[in-house]
Image 1: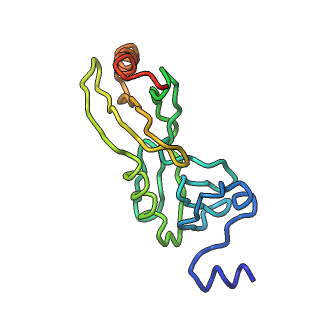
Image 2: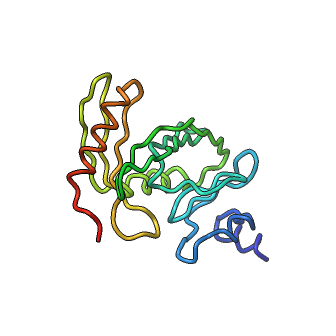
Length: 170
């Protein structure tokens, strides 16, 4: 019955592993078939085929080229409570023969996760200073995301300087 219900509403079934791992307040927004299984877009992030959720606040960028969704995840190093220094990971490419609402849903949610964005020039490049919403959590996280080639020491100093000016959490 689930397959019929999904076809009637234009949505591929959600894999059991993803359905079982969803947070109670996490809603499925869109799905599409990719090589290796379903790509599931939720209110909290993207579930790649056979993988763990990539939260909206940990995606540096996502692009759609009419054939593939390319997502660049980040890893975060906590500099201080509420302040992170990001490093871009290897872009992940998902070929979607019938993307449906997935590209639009991803673009909207990555964009909506960013509350503020400011650019800082640094030796060797620059960095984006972002305030982002974290799904399932109140408040914002401040992230510093340096461009490739930016002096890593300068990026760290920027993140530490910003963290030092923030009020301490109670």
